[in-house]
Image 1 (tube, helix red, strand yellow):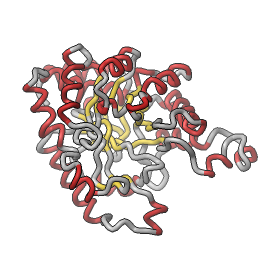
Image 2 (cartoon, one colour; image 1 turned 180 degrees about the horizontal axis):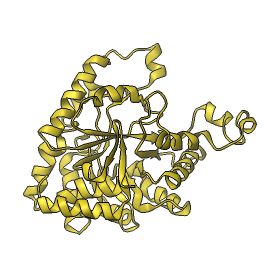
Image 3 (cartoon, rainbow, N blue to C red; image 1 turned 90 degrees about the vertical axis):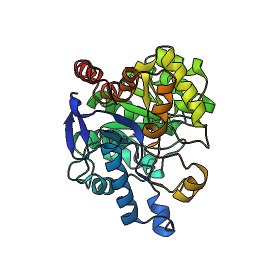
Image 4 (cartoon, rainbow, N blue to C red; image 1 turned 120 degrees about the horizontal axis):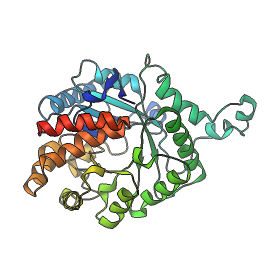
Length: 345
């Protein structure tokens, strides 16, 4: 792949630029909100806020690409993302996948290949069909917007049968389409190890996986193990200080870079403009630094003070995302040569 699918269509690898690889716009629960509307949600207001913030993120902070990992199970609604993206100077990549830490809805049981309905329909697992079609044909109701990445989850319950089914669909979709896989983990359970074992046993290219939320951990041995095994890791929750303070996150990042791991790290926030799970009022009171500008405004200046070089920052924020999103070594090398020659983020 030398191009990447975005909301406005494919872009060349040279256009990816400085990237936030694990973010969200809006995380919602449509069924719940249809019956019990959330008092803080106002679409027009949040569309305006998102458009203004993302414009500033590009024009003032130099961010070129924003990867929205909001998938089924988190209230994905790409027509709303299209409204945000319309006319913006920033690329938005959207995802396919399913967000569940334990169980899938009943639909996926009756429609499994051997399920009550599925066995009469024949064909592939509907999860696999959805993932592949989102990437190859386009997401329904969007006039052809195609996903550029797959998102999967394990958490405290580990690899339940339903979670393994999601992973299997993701693995087959990656093999068929070539797009990367990004994960959610719970570092208290060291899910990255379990994910890597599953990926390896099932033929997934570890070099095209990003083990997410690794920045919640300060266990350098665990993080280096994941990278040594071939995956990228996401230090992707800067500002989420109710989980871990940013100073500890910075300590981890600097230590890993000093030990030579910049080529395996991606940086992001896992932030959003609205989430029904952690609504704006909660964030304003408890995590005021959890927003999409935090890396540009605070994290990069701090790690520069501690000796992280511009070349290392470019590696993590430009070169590594190009590799993750394209899997094209030649294109990545070309971007690296140009970006590292410029020397600024």
